[in-house]
Amino acid sequence: MRNVRAYFLSAAIALVFLGCKTTQNVVVQPNFNLVNTTPAKKTDLSENEFQRWSHLDITQDSVAGMSLSKAYQFLEGKKSKEVIVAIADSGVDVKHEDLKGVLWINPSEIDSNNIDDDKNGYRDDVFGWNFLGNKEGEIVTIDQLEITRLVQKGKSKFANVDVVNLSEQDKKEYDAHLKLVKEYDATIIEKEVELSKMEDYLITLGLIQQDFKAVRDLAKQKTLTLELVNSLNVPNLQTLVKVKNVANILKQGMNEDMLNEEHEKVVEYLKEIKKAMKGYDLEMNFRQSLGDDLYDITDKFYGNNNVLGTAEVAKHGTHVAGIVAANRANSIGAIGVANNVKIMTVRIVPDGDEHDKDVALGIRYAVDNGAKIINTSFGKRFSPNKNWVFDAIKYAAENDVLIVNAAGNDGKNIDSRASYPTDSKDIIIEYADNVITIGASSLSYDKNLPASFSNYGKINVDVFAPGVDIYAPVPNDKYEALSGTSMAAPSTAGVAALIRGYYPNLTAKEVKEIVMNSGVKINFDVIKPGSQSEDNPEGELIPFAELSVSGRIVNAYNALQLADYISNKK
Image 1 (tube, helix red, strand yellow):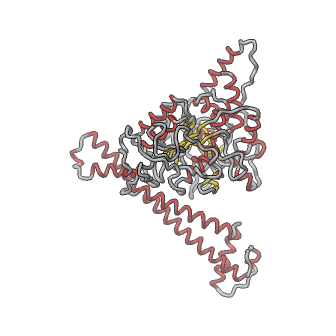
Image 2: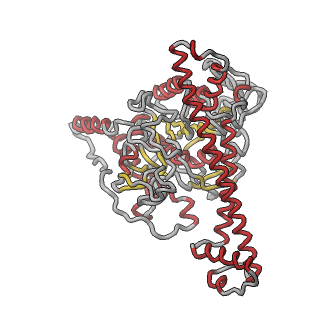
Image 3: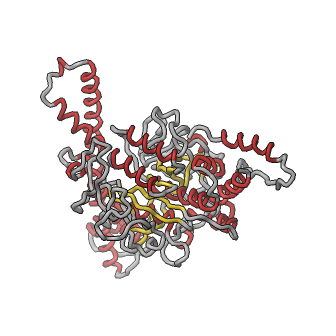
């Protein structure tokens, strides 16, 4: 994440020697340092444009997309090699109409014969493997957050201990435990306050909806306008209050449909908050009950081949897989970024925080079964067995596998607060060169370009990519627009897959640097993610260049031009 340009210096040196060949073709290195001055789009997108905005082009469409159409025009007439992309996530709906034609199928495994045909230790792993299960067919869908596990572990250790007589080492551990408990308790209070506020807001919305119905009945009209409402003859004081409430809403440019939509969003958000609260349950231990030893990395042959999990929990992973590779040729649903890709499913993420053991073994499984790219759209603040994951990432690097990692959705600077998994042990120096960490950008080519929720970091986030309202498959042959750095990572993984497919002589390290250096350079100020609040609704303006190593947003067309240039010089 730190050394963006070192490779291209060596490429320039190599060019001097290559130029000595008498038959050498002259190839001009693309220049991506020019600043794009295209103004932001001012008109609304059509439904079709909105569903594929991340594929649009900044210059042609005034939308901060990745220029996919131009990229595929550039690739016309070129041949590609199939690339396996592993989706390390919550599961994938392998029966989805837009995915079933792009799935990796283990060529050495016979489906449902209850035999480990390829003798890799994972029986009937036809589409991948579920590390959140056991051989009896049980699966885990929800689990604690890592902070909860650590607090629980500390409470067990120090429950009946004489703190005064602790050793120096144990005293340090006890102090760290108390600090963690303080954060844990404060977070629960914060979540409970948020839950209470949203419940009150939902009640208020419901009352306003009732007012609209009453005023519609009074007006005997299906649709209300401000002019109509102001002209009504009000029979009593109670109705007058309702009419004034409705008029006030209409004056703000809202209408009943927008209120209903807001109500639905709040209901869904409340469900998410309540679901997230379960992660703080100290008594929940579903993953620990599957039979393997969670704290023994050598106990690795567990799980089962149910890579879906359930349709509900597989929503995230299915969406991520679809962003990368939803069928581009079937004229239905969504359109993936990459062609000639096969999706391998590695199920390691529950509702809650993933376990380090599952992450490490999931990465190794993907590498051992031929993945050239692994998408990791997950993350957490604490990683008690991070060395297992560090070793797995290095194993992927040794086998030339690129890991595309989501930066996280806390609106935080991860240069000052670590987020795992990561390719740095000290938040400064990389221990591997095959991880690219992605922040989320929106369609707005203006101060609203970075997603308000995206993590950022001049050292630990490499580049930004589309991650707001990304339309892709969800289980049961459905489609939705979802937001998160979880969506930005597969947008980038799709571009990386195009590079690896059409230019297979490029290494994971080279692909990472190509994606970073070829992005569209942004030279204007933007609202710093996480800086907006009730007290400061406008947020803080900072240069976009301060949010990542490259100061760029991913662009497929540029990346392929640079890949073509570098590939032809090897």
